[in-house]
Amino acid sequence: MKITEELVDYVSQLSRLQLPQEEKTAMAVQLEGIVAYMDVLNGLDTSGVEPMSHIFPLKNVTRPDEVVPSGERKALLVNGPAVKDGAFLVPKTVE
Image (cartoon, rainbow, N blue to C red; front, top):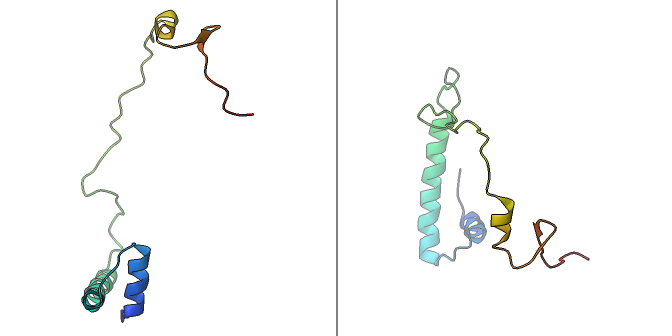
């Protein structure tokens, strides 16, 4: 695939980069190399390879749910600036 300076301008605009003219030419050559390498990878036979998200086999390592008592309501409400009916009072934000 031929990478033009217009395509480099477009990509640099998307990435919010301002490239000087001499860097645009170098960037076009580098992007052509990247695309050429992707074509090499696309040519590989991966029909027998299982898709994976990590190179190491990972499992979900969350802890099991456990019911534990929370803090006492009265003790928690002491920290609030305004309390009414067992809850914090906050200013109204929606009309």
